[in-house]
Image (tube, rainbow, N blue to C red; front, side, top):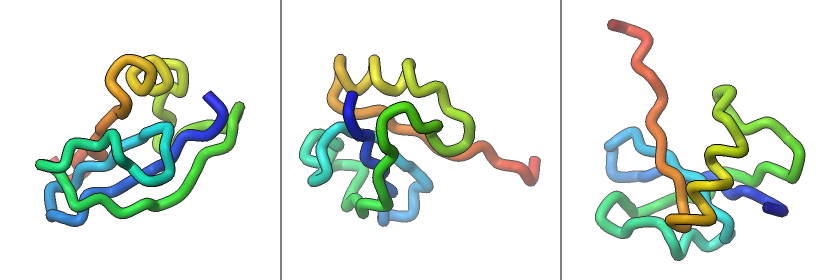
Length: 74
């Protein structure tokens, strides 16, 4: 996958997502609106040490991969 685009939901849910298209058309509307946060170039690590091969497989299968940072205050 050439570039992975990073999005964050602006609805207060704390969700983020990766997708292959810069417009985020594949992202589920019910969890949006979505804000484009940046792009990860090929062969670069994803944020938070997420496994790039797993994310790429999800994007190929579903069009996106959603994630939420772990809470650190528990």
